[in-house]
Length: 131
Image (cartoon, rainbow, N blue to C red; front, side, top):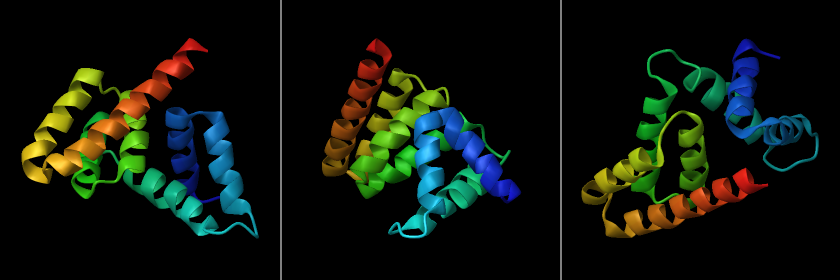
């Protein structure tokens, strides 16, 4: 296992937990699963090489990524990165400010998509914290 992949797996595990990390790792090792290389690249490149860099605190990196995802209208990724942002130290209020800041730049339709995804993420986190 490369150093970047090990670091990426460690970061992924810290943020999403053992079960999701195991799933991504197993998917990347599969010889038959469709898109297995995406799992490998996510661990090695996105999490290991990019999220593992020292140039920004994870909290700030989460702000940047969420802004880009809101601009692209990527609801599923916004949901995951909202959860990730909270794991990286963002508060719900800070996430709301990121959302508000994106509106004049990304527009109301993208903001509506983001709002729905963020509320879904908050709901999932609340449900998980209850049991």
